Figure 1: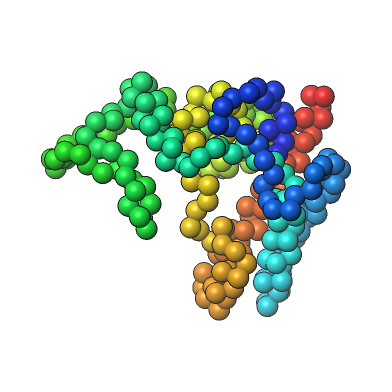
Figure 2: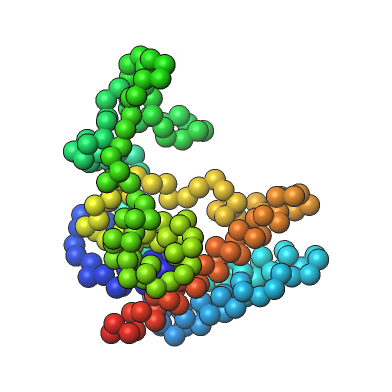
Length: 240
């Protein structure tokens, strides 16, 4: 989806924002037909009935292989530096737009990651943090964005708020003039969830109850990606 969105915008020059190939070993050029063939194959694979007993791992490996091929060919919007380089801009943006930013600071808690650390005593039940609704990325803000026309026509977006928000984030991430850019620049590039595990890490979950949820999540996410890639491709072709 992001691959298509990046090309559907007129990307102006902006410091500290760039695009690059998503995976290692990416080819210099990617034909739309080649990409669409991979997407169609992925969508077909992810839309197939559940595999028989003992075949789930084989299906997961096949889907993962297709995903990796696509990752190596698509473009992503990336930001220079580390996410904590953008924390001062985030605080400034939040303050200017009415959020409370006193009494705490952003700190690195090592294994737990970044979070808020109090800089003064906070009393029980004291309200010390508030964020105006206009700073939130919501289904309503998605409907009022560039995503609005697609939302009004696509039943999946209308029925699944989480998909709408994920798509909303992708759209805003690809827009160098997004209102939410100071927030988006501070988001992690990856997460410690099974969706981001390497194949050998997923193997450690074999013979556990969790493995079925991992397979299902990966397959569903890949199917949603492939579906919306084709939807956006059709819309772009109609516009052109």
